[in-house]
Every structure is written in C-alpha cells, then in structure tokens.
Image (tube, rainbow, N blue to C red; front, side, top):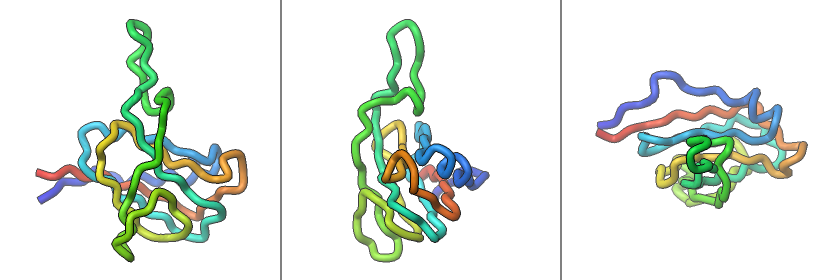
Length: 124
C-alpha cells in the first residue's frame, strides 16, 4: 500500500523558463515523472544529498544543492533503466537522494516540453 502527494505538480512553466527544476524529496520513497510530448532536446535526471548548506549560516535547499550526479529512472513503458528522458512517457525514480533535479539539455536554451508532471509516493 502506498500514499501519494494529494496534488500532482505541473512543473511545465518553470521548466520551460529556466530549463531545469528542483525538488526536495525528503520523506518520499518514489517519484513518477510524466513527460507529455513533444519534447525538444532531452531531460537529464540527477540527484544529490549535498544541500549546499553553510554551517551556522543556512540549512541549504534543493536550489542551493551542489554536486548533482546522474541517477537512474525506470521507463515504465519498457522497463529499461535510463538517466535521461528523450520523449514522452512515464519514468519512475526510487528516491535514494534528498534532492532531485531535472535538467534540460542543452542547458541554456532549446529544451522545451509540452508538459512535465511529478507525482510523489510513500510506501506504508
């Protein structure tokens, strides 16, 4: 049995504005990413546990986090593991890092998606 975040997060506008989105995954076990085409470019899937916190100055957060590295997601249509999204579909990420980052490539411009949604789950 699992519970899900009550609101499906539509992150299309932030992604298409700055070509990246961040999410604090603390307390969640799984995240499903849904990409609705068309997609130009690709979306890299990355994670980190380094919050970018400065001792006694800030607690850090997903946007201050550093040292993002590629992580794997399961393409739910094929069952294969991927670290980048090249087209529409559902992709499931097992949460083993505190922060998740979806980075468009090329990073500066040109990566646009019709719609991108995140749904978080917690196993009971």
